[in-house]
Image (cartoon, rainbow, N blue to C red; front, side, top):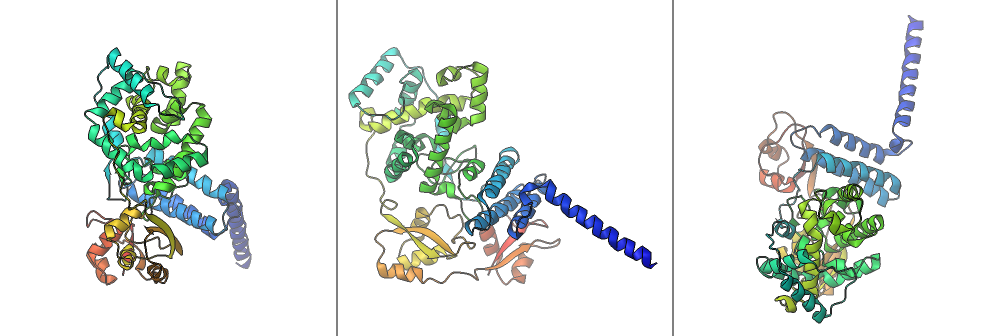
Length: 455
């Protein structure tokens, strides 16, 4: 009996040590790594297991948690950048292939101008029209940092922008004055032609909340996966695609990478719209790196074929608006007359706006990347944008604002038989608050779903 017991113990030890070695060898990412990364791997696997569920938002939630944990650990110096990059690539690939249609958490959305542009009905211009636009471009004497080819497609878009899309383009030009100078600086610093700073005219109309049918968000119209690959945080707390400067820096890096890959700015622009893979396949099939030759084939989508001439048309107009029937209006000064300050986090944006005497909608307008009504509770310090005119005494009061460390009771996993009413009663909160914090559109919850419970 004793021999059998000893044999059993030895067998268990051998089996467990074998399993341990097997785990370490099968996944190099988790090999000899610390607790936070093991936890991130747990969230990643949990997300993968939920990919087949009807509501893919839950899978996205766990991927967000995995990335946030890694990013925080990287900031603290306990995780190497290579590990973070590897997870970003894995999760981005999953999002691109399996999570294309997940719901973006933000409810503040406006239609992206790109959806209007690609559906614009074009009429073939006459040779007289083409000649007139070419003469106009010469007389305007603008300077360009990218090649500008004025052809029949570009002229067709100019005529459309002067007529059926006139108001949309005028609105975009009005908003461009808020951000354009800073975007040009960012592009120049990155080594990208400054003319590409005008790209949001046809992408988003320079709206921070612009959201397209392709589920791209922000002034620079990033989808979630590409945004993350270029350093933007996108989750249920922050959506940095809506941050003008951070997204502009990401766009500059992305465009630079595309140009390095294709060696041509028109192909880089086509890739920005249609994806580098599709453009590469078109080049291989046609045997040419001339954009307009590729655009005459079926290998590029209609949207991508129109994208480059539409941008060139918008660039010509933006450089000499009055020559094309547009006007230069004074931009809104709220963003231009603002600055960034560090505050202890998490805090309620309503508390900040109250101290500054700034209407809450304007506070949100200055900080569109903050998805919720509070700064991230997993950051000790957070940088927010406030009016430059804010009094020094108010700034001191702002720095002393106590963090809402007890804003939340914590996370709760929904169990069978739970309802929002029973959960709210259990934690002495309200159904309305739970729905607001978790961005729930209905009272329907399923077992296993994680909810953040406000006090």
